[in-house]
Length: 271
Image (tube, rainbow, N blue to C red; front, side, top):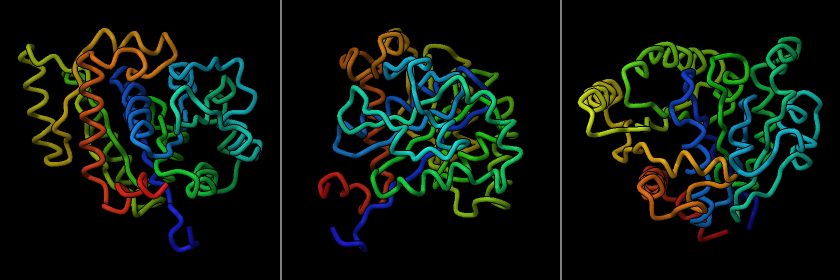
């Protein structure tokens, strides 16, 4: 492959400052299904809670180098990336030290772009780099949005999910204005949906009215098997491929790929 043809992996930040909306579940399972389709993926666990790390079978206490060491201690990213149980999916894990990174970043020059410098060095090795952001709008999330090409927003189909949405959109607008003018909204995915509940249908309609065509057609249902998978340290595709949650994330992955430029969709065939 010539220098001109080198791939430049797309960086996607999964962001919502409200916790418990299926953000990590969506990040892990989209990444896994993309890898299963032949795309080389890196999942960056930027959440101090480390749920994506444990959800892929790694104990935070056993991680030698993490995203914290790469950002704060200048450890090369290659020394902190782990192979996962899914062929083609790598992990840059979280660790307990990441909880203090927000404070330490304050004293670093150009602190909003620390993650961008790290991930730009890895772009040529991956088709997609997915970043699981913390459930907050602090410096770690700002770093993710400043580094990303796009933001993907999982929203739970419940009333409280609408609260704070304007704050998230305002943060994205500020990042576009001051830090990352090319940042786009990748889309909005409705998660943990119970279509039998009237309130779920009403909230879904409100979200679609607010975001328009940015909302993915695929809706992720509430599903016990989805909730179980992280405790086994695997994505849903390795836990139960026949459940409604697995079918939904597979359909979501296909819809996500349909929205990508043709050159991106062709990358797996060329790899």
